[in-house]
Image: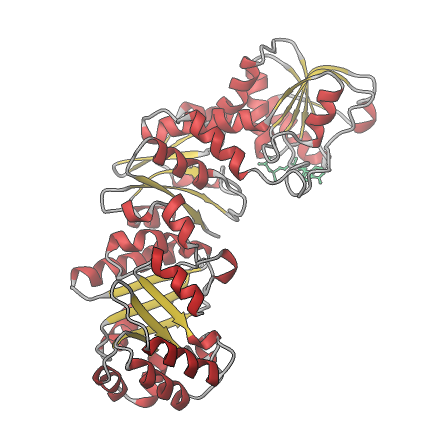
Length: 486
Ligand code: ATR
């Protein structure tokens, strides 16, 4: 712990020591003793000894906790004390810690939810007269995160030193935007596997990817909305593009399990624009004020721009399919195209291919879905046994088969099928099993990366009015692609 603290001193002004994660009372005493020999001129230390009942690691009683914290108070630094211990021991304990030289963070935690009645919790914490008032609750939706940010805004306006933050993936926005809304500091882990709360990012991610020191009240906030967002590349791409173009903007993961409160939380977070991904590309349409012709054409939205109070939906997935095919110089008019898959991506591909008068055959694991797509766009459904000895100009893979981590899988065996070109919409990895097979057979191949870039280029322009710095983004994509061996 002491070595980790020394490392953290270089990058962070505030350092929290979670004494409750030490092996036992003897270690705790040793650390407090060792700290008393050190001086901290540039750093603030926070000593935390959270009890198990409150989600910490300290198995002892309130009395044992307070005894150790009184010792730690002699360090003349900060002590984090949970409100439950104050409820148990009385408010006098805060004064006692203060008299020994500590400043006090009084904290409330809830690892299940963000309760409806936050003002009542604030009143309870204020009564303990903390130096910093801390609330950390689990966010089950983006609306929970927005409520926490609004509370932080209000406390800041009242001049109360506070730290209101959301745990879990939906809470990430509060960790990144908090400092620009006046939180005293924000929490981050030194290493990814050492996070002390769910949804916590690393110091490196906050500093390099999100450039947190530059986020202020004029920073334009963008994000990607979906559920789950585990593998979304949007934040990495956008944030590196913002850095390369020196724009005062940030792009956040906005993971949410429900969409009904979408307009409320986007307003509270002052969101300028969104990338929309699964499963909301269709569901989001009814919450928008206006649909651009691209969204109407694809009957799906992957981009939302806020123009004042108006929310406008666009679709750039179709451009993402169009551009790489154009660049490859394929003639689609009257060409036979085999479309694999019948989900959202297949729908965008079908819309474009049909508009180019291609003769589209759709093949899907679930035949009923293939039939539905075929009816929508007047395509032909083709069965597995009919594929042999067919000739196509192009095969488009719009299934997720072959996507990392299942990189050995391929949606179709190319032996016995003749085609000039294969376009795989999967971009992770850039060369899927299907594309590798096609390349070895001398077919022309188009990687999903090309679709991703074309789609992102169009989206970036709609959302920011600027050009996506393509070379910086290609570099970033190379850096974040999974290792071929994994
Ligand atoms: P997206 O919007 O990315 O297209 P989706 O709507 O979930 O995502 O569609 C996924 C497509 O991949 C579907 O066509 C799906 O086939 P089913 O309609 O039979 O579900 C296809 N797919 C996913 N996993 C598959 C697998 N293991 N084998 C074959 N097809 C698969």
